[in-house]
Image 1: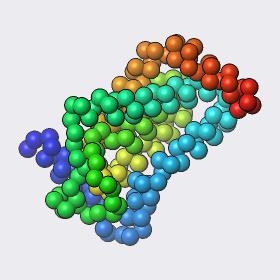
Image 2: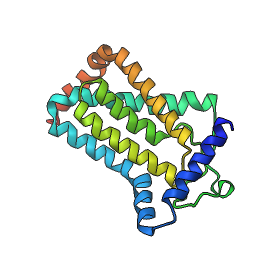
Image 3: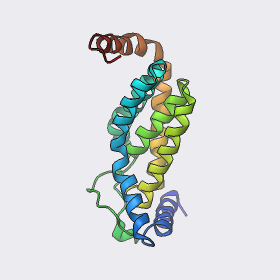
Length: 193
């Protein structure tokens, strides 16, 4: 059995195990898969004000996640491999949400959420890193369960996130000097930092 067949079978197994048994569980997984990512900006903004001593770590983690999402998943990976979203009818997957036909590898959600969690670990805010890691796992599992991503898409997102954090860690000093500090200077002038 090749890796893509295994990936298809794993998607079907997760979907059949979690979807279609209880409508409340279907609704919860749909909400997690579709809407929790919109909580992220509010959460990051709240953390900016709640933990001023951790702003550098939060900024670097966000920068790494954004870099991974914007550069790696949007520019680099599509030039290597374009993988369509799961064909729910073909795979026999129980559909909970409709997702417009697009490419699924790597997962944007996984890239962004794992990028934040890995970044928080890398830049010394481990307590927040654990919370974001749990959030990333739950959202990623929900997105596979509802059939909008293959498990391999999630692994691709995790790899993209790790690469983004690695790059930002290498460039940490210039990022802090030439991007973070000017932004904070402006934010202090308008009483937001």
